[in-house]
Length: 111
Length: 112
Image (cartoon, rainbow over all chains, first blue to last red; front, side):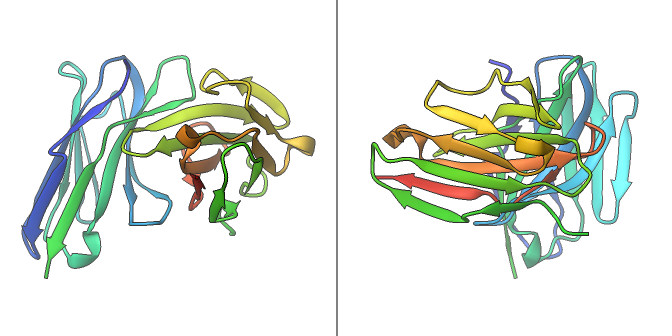
């Protein structure tokens, strides 16, 4: 299976705390992307990191990529209740357009 | 700029019936993708259109699924006949460059 895996599967934190989610994948990639899905809604693109990048920031989001370990992490700093959602990593492999999604992390942020 | 639009947002049909899902991509995006998430499993690729042509349909589960993109604009995904295991959320995405994707809100399909 080329499926990515994420951990933890579920994460519960208090507002103001940081949330870290990890993603592992199996193939060589062009880039890795993180998406958020609020309950009953579509996938919202958060950030893309290319295979030659190691770290990227966007607002309260920080993404790292370690291609030698085939892993990535998403850090959300100073979390808010509105960050409650499922978060997915998705990889775009060499020579193909299809995104391979991880299993997702359900984040619950309590006010 | 309007986003990717999918309808219906929800559909409940009986096993054996036919359902057609529609996706309107962002105007000017030649690339259109279908994905689905069946209950409790990961989001999986179904197929990719470039304009009206099927670029990659390796993810289509079987011949009960038919996708079209007439004229290279909107796309439809027909399931005929629907089975219980087809229940899930079907996502459409479009892209101008095969790198950045915009997803629609999805169609939640329930087959009973």
